[in-house]
Length: 291
Ligand SMILES: NC(=O)c1ccc[n+]([C@@H]2O[C@H](COP(=O)([O-])OP(=O)(O)OC[C@H]3O[C@@H](n4cnc5c(N)ncnc54)[C@H](OP(=O)(O)O)[C@@H]3O)[C@@H](O)[C@H]2O)c1
Image 1 (cartoon, rainbow, N blue to C red):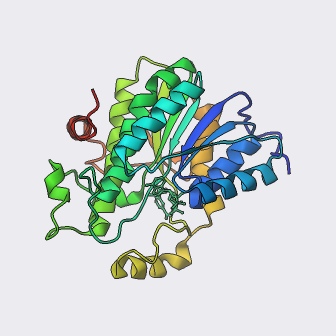
Image 2 (image 1 turned 180 degrees about the vertical axis):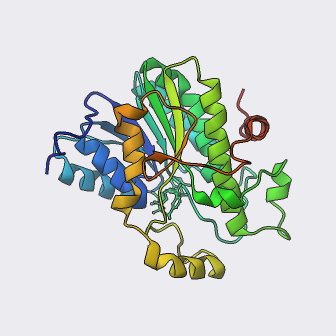
């Protein structure tokens, strides 16, 4: 089925999306392909990546998505990914940092990071920074970070060892902290990119019926997820704000905003705090080894 004619087209545009193998990301990728975008699908699982590619091509037979494999919880792989993207493409028009996890019990990666902090925040921080030259090469480019209303309960701990403390760890708190980081990162990025043609915005997709809370999640989270079921929306609905931010001409010049239901929305006081955003940038640069 062809995309309705009135929807903005993305012909000739290259869109890189992380986490397109399920949930919100899969619908976002499918719909952007229907609008003519050339998709770069960043997945960790080759089978799920191929299934996603097939699904996209069923909806848009002319589409030829590329698959790049990367486990975003490993920063060394994120660096390899960025190098490969830079080698293959001359420009990037849209970068959608969508992949995310709701963690289970405390997991520290081999590189020493708490799993949700590195997957949800440090990986998009590093990937985005490493891809800035390609985004700049597009002339006008958009960065979209999928955050969450969960950020209202988040805070930014001063150092990694606080997040890795087994006594104090709560998977829900860790998730909220990482989603606050998504918004602070977006704001600082928008500020740093003011004099360029690149915008950076973030969003809450709604409470969406996806695989985010899974059998490995804590019992409390699984209960909360069950209770939220009556107000949950489908991934088709949850993907709309990402699609809007990637395509709509009305937001071409808007940057540093938080969106809900495809409209600018209020984020928490902490999320809007400039000093906190620049503190997080310093912490993130140190933890990722970004020059
Ligand atoms: N669902 C909600 O209610 C909700 C609400 C607010 C915000 N969000 C945000 O929306 C975004 C998408 O989540 P979703 O709800 O669509 O969840 P989902 O169905 O679980 O999708 C998450 C995606 O991220 C990928 N991913 C996870 N860890 C990865 C890693 N280490 N390396 C590479 N890819 C990885 C997954 O890949 P695999 O297929 O390999 O697992 C999957 O494609 C997340 O950032 C989440 O925080 C969701």
